[in-house]
Image (cartoon, rainbow, N blue to C red; front, side, top):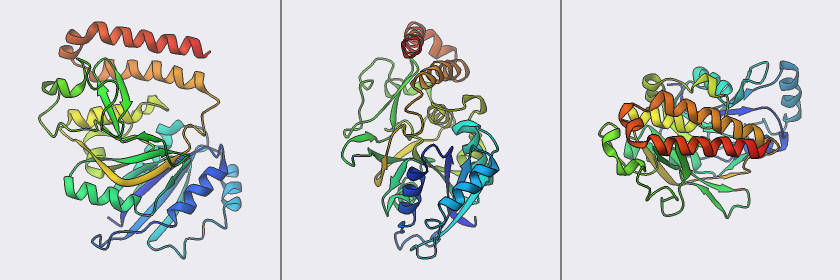
Length: 300
């Protein structure tokens, strides 16, 4: 591969200042000396018109000077022409990537200097096909995610500092039913938060890209479930820290998120769950979908 990693950043330029800050922190990236290929590409995938993308490129001209960074970092732009959602833009980035690893990164995040290095070192140590970052909120204090746990009712939840969540002791929690997945490393997290996650190229070659019709939300859960069903697992990089100004690009669209949760969870349980899962957890799956429906109705 030409690059060690391809960092895919989908954006609608909802707040260019967030993207500016994200790029500023990427300029500070550095690698552990044990990593020989210290190159990366940043693929900014724009869910906008060419005109809007060109306007933003001029606006960000000063921050796009990567001549002084400690690693070789090439920035590239991909114009989608219209809003294809997180999924459409990210899939375009994956398809164009030339890195050994594909790294998802939201445009409203800030990374720490060793973030990418720690993701890579963790992957090489564990041989995991998915690696989760440690995600704090924008206050730099509140832990938001260390990857997520998963329950067969069709629900996922971020893990806390103890690698647990409110689902952990439920009878349908995934670790309590290891026979439902191929024998592999049954470890937490189930999968990484798509706001900042590393994946191997092998994963996409075997599992495929993100599901096109998800558009946005829960695509990372669906991808992790497919990967687990292919015998892959996730590792957690404790020192790969980022700060996420969560939902900065979608905070005004709570009804949209609730609608996507309702639709996309239904797609996951109907497409990914076999007869064994449905038979054992039918009532829990149904109740959880009704909760999704209630959440959507209340958000309108």
